[in-house]
Length: 188
Image: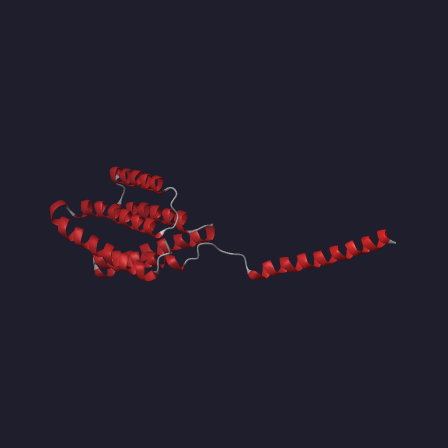
């Protein structure tokens, strides 16, 4: 499949934000906000993980990745760390999966880590300014949608490649001259 577009990410962000706000608004009166949010964070992580799988052309290791993510989500739910740590664990898992499935270098993966930190910052800003779960979730996934702008691999600069070719050309020219000199020497 072709790499997803930013517009595709915006649609996914809106759908996930609607899901999160609807579930939180519906279940909070019955079980409390903290219990609902501890359910919604892994559910959003799973939904986003499935979106990443559908957008990636990499087919190897999906079952293993999904299994390891499920174990991580279950252990996180069972241990019940503070809410910010729970969020960081799940964002870190999404970052790791995206780094494995979309990038082939350390620099793009580090750029994606910066994007993940920026998305957490945007979500915290949105929730503190508006108090809206929809806007906080939408801002988070909207910034996450920018991962399509990160190149899959960083290539070497053209200047270095051109210098290598020039050096090879001068070497080849010297080798041809040496071959001609040896041919003349032996043919006399």
